[in-house]
Every structure is written in structure tokens, then in C-alpha cells.
Amino acid sequence: GGELTMTARREAVTSPSGERYDWTSCLISSTPSYGFRYGYVEERAVLPRARGFWPALWTWQAPFENRYIETDVYEFYSETRHRLDLTQHSGAGGNCKPALPFDPADGWHTYGAAIEESGTTWYVDGVEVCRTAATSDGVTNIVSNLAVFAEVPPTDGTREAVKRVDYIRAWQRP
View 1 (spheres, helix red, strand yellow):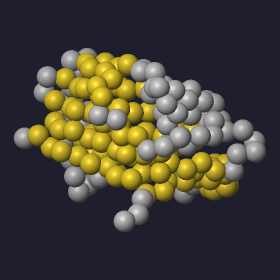
View 2: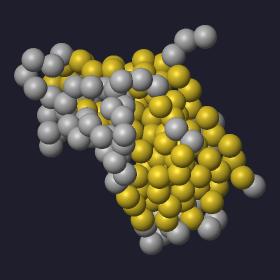
View 3: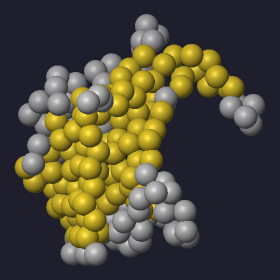
């Protein structure tokens, strides 16, 4: 009956390799329990308002695949409040950057992609917003994350950002 709250926090951390970072953040993945090639993936979420964050829902090649396979169901760069990046990186590739008639931080919205043999189609709140003939060329796992965007970092006064997730759903095609 709850929701997933992904939080990025301004806190110093040192990685096992000794690299120092100023932020912690998070992701959730279906690896190794669920992978698919064709199907539909959808997330219902409220995205962060503060500048400097990069939430996304995407697929990434399964551990046994030996090539780069990725579909970005959405990437949201929080400094551009009304635009998504939707990209099929596999094969010939294809993408678009639709303008949104709303601010993704103002409430719940659904972001989805149908990855079919004939191409990839993206949806926002159940409405088609982009289509490409490019498609996945292998088995992928689902990843949802909240990253800190190094190219346009958060302001000095920003201490944290939150991505709220109601659900992540996937329907697999044979």
C-alpha cells in the first residue's frame, strides 16, 4: 500500500575504489529476476523539482548479453522542466524530445514504452508521444533511478531530491 521513494542526498561518501563523491543516490533493477526483449514497460511517478537531477526509467542488457542494448523509456533532466528524452539506443537507434504540457514534479504521471519487433513507441499518461522503427536487439532488464546530473549540478543550497514511484509494470511479449 506504499510507494517507493528514491532519494538523492548531499552527503560525502567514499567508494570501495577510494573515489570520493558529494552525493548518494539510488536505483532499482529487475536483474537477475526479470528480463525481456519485447513488451511494454511503464512507471507512474512524481519527478524531482530541484535543478540538477536526472531520474530515468530504462532497460539495460541482461548479464548474459555481450553487446550494448538500451531503451530509455524516459530520461528527465530537471533543469528542463517540460521535456523528456526518449531514446532507443539499440540497432539503428531513434529518439525524440517531446514537450510536456505539465511539470512532472506537480503530480503523478505515467511514462511507458512499447518495445516491439517492428519498433518502439513511447507514451505519457497513455497518449503516444513518439515512435521509431528502432527496437531492442536482445534481452534487457528494467532499471529505475534517480541520479545527480554532473553537467548541471544542484545549487549549493540543495540538500536532497526525491523521485516518488507508485508502480513499475512490465508486460512481456513472446
